[in-house]
Figure 1 (cartoon, rainbow, N blue to C red):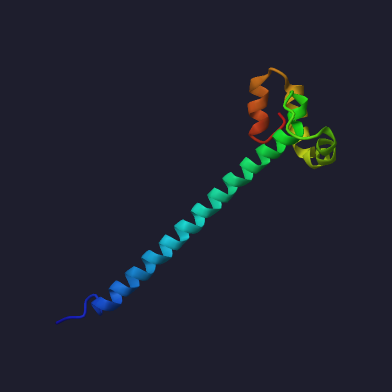
Figure 2: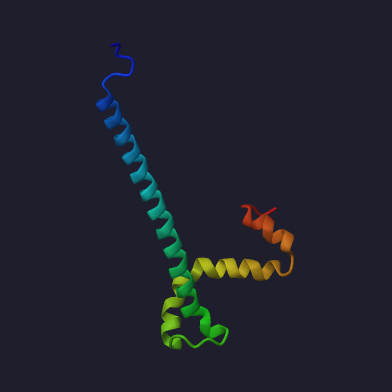
Length: 101
């Protein structure tokens, strides 16, 4: 018999090892995407807690909202930019694409 493919048991073990490595990589990537989704949900909940009183949702006391407000400086910049752009939807799309044209 010729040894074209080598030992079949070694080949099966190698294929199984590659399969398990791919499976673990897929699980790792899936867990990262789940963590990113959880982060977005937590950020949305935080924004609702802090800025909810501005729109009439009384979720937390005003004092706590004022203490947490400095943590929202990046989000406030985004809100300010959107307010400045007003109803100019095309300008908002170009801004979201990454530049001020």
